[in-house]
Each structure stands twice: as C-alpha cells, then as structure tokens.
Length: 229
View 1 (cartoon, rainbow, N blue to C red):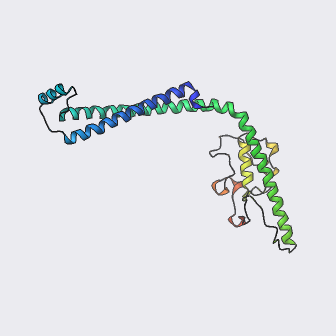
View 2: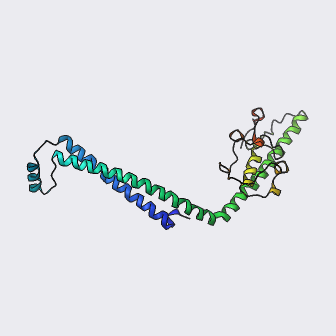
View 3: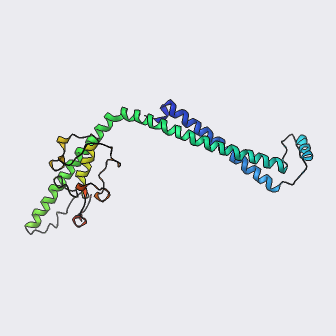
C-alpha cells in the first residue's frame, strides 16, 4: 500500500532526494566562498598559486573565488531545472501507482463507506423522530424541562430535498456508485444523477451553504438551536 513499493515512483523520489542533497552541498559551498570573498585581498595569480602550492590547497585569490561562485550559480540553475523535470516525472508515476493502490483497496473502502452511509441514514431518521417528539410535546403545551433536545447538528430531513444535508450526502454517495438508486430516499430518486464527471469535492456531510445544487439550499431561519452532541 506504500507508494515507495512502486519501482518507478521510488526511483523518481530517490533522484529527487539526490538532487536536493547536491543543491544543499552547493549552497553551503556558495556561502563559504562568499564569506571568503568578503575578506580576500587582491593578489597576483602567481602569488596565489605559489601560496596554494605551499599549502597544498586550491588557490583562493579573488579571481578564483569569483570564478568558482559563477560555476556554482550555473550548476544551481541546472539542478533546479533537473528538479522540476524529476518532480513532474515523480507526480506522473505517483498518479499511476495511486490508481493501482486504490483499485486494490476498493473493496475495503466500500465496506467502510457503506457503514458510514447506513449509519448516517439511521442517524438522520433518529434525529427526525426526536424532532417530531419535541414538536408533539410543544403542541400539547408541555414544558420539556427535563427532556432537552438531543440532535447531531442540522442533518435535515430524509424527505425534504431543500436544505437537507443528509440528502446532499446521499446524492454524493450515489454519484460515486456506493449506493444504488433504489436505496435512496424516495424524495431524492428523481433528482439524483450518476457520476459524470466525478464530484469536485470529497464525499462528506458538508454545509449546504457550500453547495449549489438545488436540493441543498438552506434557509438560515431554520437553523437548529438545540444542544448538539
């Protein structure tokens, strides 16, 4: 299930890591040479080479430092271009590997998703029943002092297509092919559409205010003020 198990992705990721390390080394050398250049005194090429011969190190006259800094700057530009090409290749292999992994995990995902969908439908139905219960008490003129409202957010109704978050959620589930049309609430069956093209947003019980489909418009005056759990 790991992307690095895919040889092409792993190779691209390794090349990118090697380029990153090479860039870090060059940038460190660049900083060191820049510091030396600030304190270096102009010397003739002969003197600089003579000192290098005695010390066994490369000459560090101003001209040599500047030449090396120019070489590093050019190499950094080449490295950045190589990193961009490698990143593009890595993303291409990531897409291919991700599709293969998702195909392998599809049965597991479906099992988990169906649990969520069925639980969401049951929760919405329970919330509707609780709401009707309190409406009945209110109609009788009873003060429900010890019977507080117990609702989970504002899921909406399974029968009212306007402003219902639960129906928006179930419509997405149908659009992704997770539930058949026959299992959708009756109020939704004539409005639901199959997945063409895929939804642009993840499958979630979203706020109706973030969705433009007609059956999820919300009336702010109907927002719940009940205790949420």
